[in-house]
Length: 166
Image (tube, rainbow, N blue to C red; front, side):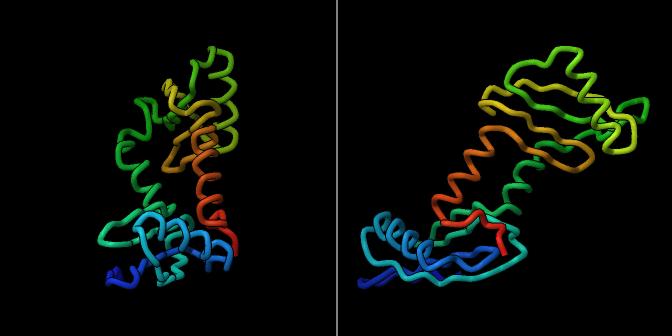
């Protein structure tokens, strides 16, 4: 990690899955310069293993918004039983407002068909999602929540990329 600071400039290490566009670099340099109150030089590192997002190390501080780290953070508290007593997969479905029984049954049927085995729904109400749905099943996460979409949009606006284009 290179984070040198001297009287003239600060060096920021920026790790992304794909190279930043010249416009994204210029915007990032400007925003980081405002943050530290001086000139910033980027040391850009392209690392496809981060999958998407960005990790910035500047002046001894690190911001890690990479997809790999986000997935690790999301899965850390979600360790638990993947199956119920009857051997059915447990799908944790997070929504802003509770789904009625018919919608829960419909969702269980669709997930069962998609996964090729019986699924039972464990419904969680999470007002912080703002809207949409987040489903965690069999080690996979589908996050169609408004909160996640806004987060992806913020990443695009800050970095100039979605972090996933080749």
